[in-house]
Image (cartoon, rainbow, N blue to C red; front, side, top):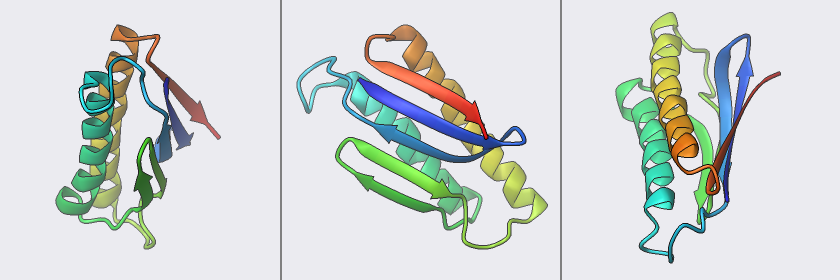
Length: 111
């Protein structure tokens, strides 16, 4: 199962962690793993190339951990853009989890 953990502070997404494999199909043909990977890695690329941030993250097989949006202070526009990218990712991941509850779970928590 893939577990997505979203960490919020005052309603704003500050970090996320994704781990595991869906078990939906064999490696290389698992559309659920592919969807989660594309959505999460696409969000990281969006933060970098669209919003202009340098997010702090680690990625390897079955794992993506974004621990900070940036090492620097964000402008109001950057914060707004980052939240738009990340909220879009979370909405899409929650839809995947709703469609495939045996394969994906999303834990959206406020600290």
